[in-house]
Structure formats: structure tokens, C-alpha cells
Image 1 (cartoon, rainbow, N blue to C red):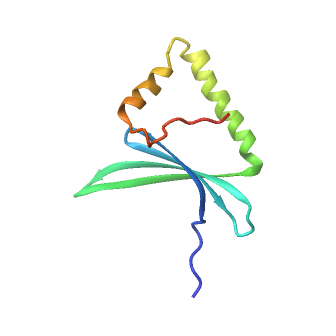
Image 2: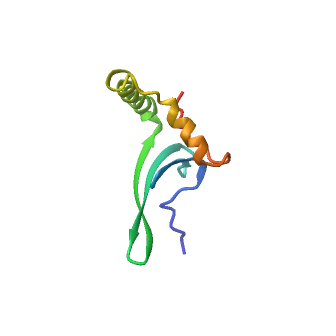
Length: 111
């Protein structure tokens, strides 16, 4: 019997915790050893007798990496420089360092 391979093997993974949400950035391989990125948002929700997790996933292929990265950087920079120029965004990094353990990487870097 053939195994279900809808979920590909993870090659690399990063996790970003953000309150009740966690973001996963995973590199996976196709059968032909090509690589792609999945971005998953996982939200913890209370339901009935416990917690459940609602997940949303984006698949990003190599031909779109640069376009995606440029659009994300441009959008974040617009908010930081044009809409919220007086906000010290480094304060959030300091707060995250206080709230997380040293083993969890909470920074999202694209460059």
C-alpha cells in the first residue's frame, strides 16, 4: 500500500511565537528535489473541553521568493517609516526577549 505523501518532508523550520498565534516557516522538498516554502499560521482557540488549533497555510515557490520578499519588505517599511515613524519597533524585540526562553527564536529576518 502506498503511503500518503501530501505532507512533504521538512528540510528546515523556523517558529515565531506571537501571542495566541504561532507562525511556522518550513522548507520542504518535492519528489524531484525541488524546494518550496510553507508559511503556516496556527491560532490557539478554546473549544468545549480544551484547546484546538486553527491553521492557515501559504505555499511559496522559488520563482516567487524575490517578489514575495520585496513586497513584504516594502509593506513593513511603509508602515514603519510612513504610518508609524515615531514608534520604536526595537522595544518589541526587548519585550520578546524578556518573555521567551533563549532557545526560541522570535525574530523574522529576510535579509
